[in-house]
Amino acid sequence: MNDQAPYTPPKVWTWDKENGGKFASTNRPIAGATHEKKLPVGENPLQLYSLATPNGVKVTVMLEELLERGHKGAEYDAYTIRIGDGDQFGSDFVAINPNSKIPALLDRSTPTPTRVFESGSILLYLAEKFGDFIPKDPAKRAECLNWLFWQMGSAPYLGGGFGHFYAYAPEKFEYPINRFAMETKRQLDVLDRQLAETPYIAGDEYTIADIAIWPWYGVLAQGKIYNDSGTFLEVDTYKNVQRWTKEIAARKAVKRGRVVNRVAGDPGEQLEERHSAADIDKLGL
Ligand SMILES: N[C@@H](CCC(=O)N[C@@H](CS)C(=O)NCC(=O)O)C(=O)O
Image (tube, rainbow, N blue to C red; front, side):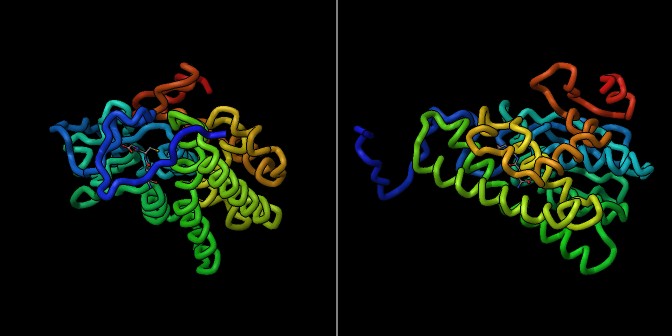
């Protein structure tokens, strides 16, 4: 039984800076820069400012896939943005992404530098720029974009909903955990039914839809995020998702991309900055 008095929202919301949550020190109800900070710039055409969270990994996997297929223009410098330290609120970062979230990309190969933010927008930008990992046939392309946008709309329920309340909230509350576990399982079932029909998410080809979805739902299905959520959600029961996630995890570009801007976990899988292929080669993955 819950002996706490139920919460009644006040008439006007006020900001409790010390709410005890894991992200209390960086989350704010206002946008914009908090401090002046220059970002480093390397020699490569693409400059990436990111962190190896699922949204960050989408982009580094895409860049490594492009390089693997010989697109030299996809050479990139990757710098780590430590979101726990508030780097996303520095002035140069906010100029690239006014939403203050990783990943953020600056394409310096265009006549004037092009800023690209939102991981889905970055994947689409790179797919169009290099004409790869997106089908050319209009119907197949539409299907690829269906799933790319599905991911962008769905993942906040997984990360901001289920993951937050199951793993990060200062206390365990049954109502949100139930609500978001149900939705996460429904989403896994959506993917499982799709993958029963097609080898990859959007059909016969590996595309930006797989690249967007794998770091979230593929990694969830491997039981690698949110503590013991794999057991809690019975991820092993999604057989087609299991087949797909193992296949994607074995790709060379995925193994390379997932370590870039990783600054936690196994030290052999961490790379704070990437400037050339040799930086990743050194890890001997
Ligand atoms: N819809 C955005 C979400 C990006 C996002 O939520 N990034 C997180 C890390 S995964 C972040 O930078 N959080 C820092 C903050 O919220 O202050 C995208 O897909 O790019």
